[in-house]
Image (cartoon, rainbow, N blue to C red):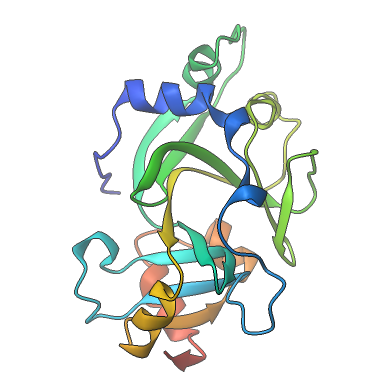
Length: 207
């Protein structure tokens, strides 16, 4: 699997330390409006024209007239040990084993960390995205995952994709994106190298 190198080890450590300062609920948009794309996947058109989002698949967290927020789920950065993640947040790694794949969630605020996960896990900071999928920004979640007390399915990402008022709607009018259902199996289990193609196969309509 090819990794992108937009994040240094230092920036990942800083992001992990800052996890508790991130509030998804405070971001632009909300999932309450009827035409919201929250809880769905945006799949980049082959002709999107923005190299930052070429073949991107984005899980939409929030969307309304005031803006939109999503997490790119097919941009792996690197694989690291859980022990190194715990050390980055100042914890004693002890006998923690295992490795985890980290993702670049988008170009906005790359120091912001997010844990997408299955809905069998919940903390005070957890926000439900759609059936079977939730998001939490919490160092405690990293600890729980490392110690095998966390959710069954996880995806840890740094940064997000953000749109201001009317920006996403304009891109939709230019046919830059398709929409696909955010199936948990697709979000968490699908081969990342095949995810864009698989999501395209499930697209419901062109935007």
